[in-house]
Length: 113
Image 1: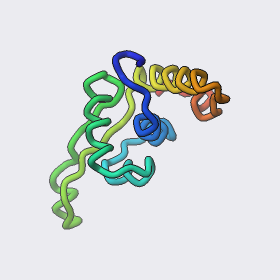
Image 2 (image 1 turned 30 degrees about the vertical axis):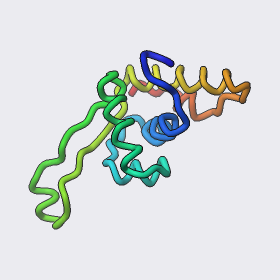
Image 3 (image 1 turned 120 degrees about the vertical axis):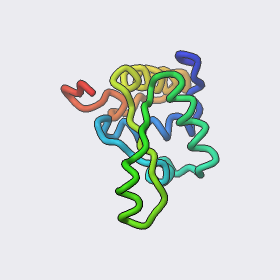
Image 4 (image 1 turned 180 degrees about the vertical axis):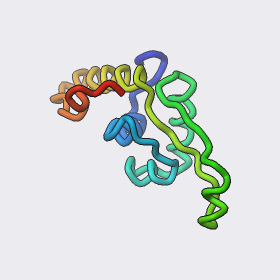
């Protein structure tokens, strides 16, 4: 565990989706697709990550979803501190499994998200 969070494969998948572009906000169903996880798995992970301070979320402006005729979206983004902690935790999980740490864990060069 790292910072009280278990680095399960689904948690790593969610973090990988968020770390792909740490500055970009993503909504829940988009994260379901990127992480290849059902919503019943994704949302509890996002809640844990948010409680830990690794992720922040916000509801979109109601006029956007009304104008587009769809449900209101909640957007998630990894915090700067969360990105750093996530990369460290994922690297540790890979090393524990004696696997090579993937390059995406290091993050973009000059990333100050």
